Length: 127
Image (cartoon, rainbow, N blue to C red; front, side):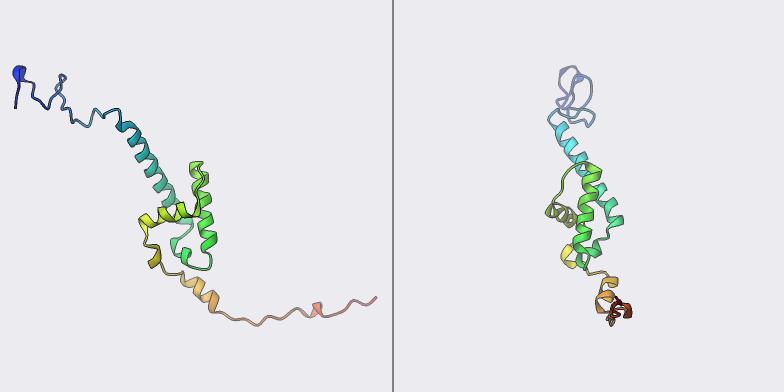
């Protein structure tokens, strides 16, 4: 409802609404910074997933992949991340329990090869 002078309750003296997005309350500045850093963190995680595929987190290489993700985030953001921190981040994007191991890993585990020491190992040197 307009008040005297044509300025409504929802309008400030400059004609802008008090709810205008142009004027963020000072208390929200820290939340904006937190939100921006959260977005930055998620973007770096997605970049890391290009190098370290999440499917390998369930395979025989899961420790190496997890370490690679931790190191990538540490170097990118200059901040320490524990394995549980990285897994929590990944849980936002993936249902980690539903990830299946990479087929390559399964093939490697199922291959059997006979191992023989080279013949030169058994030849004794003459003294």
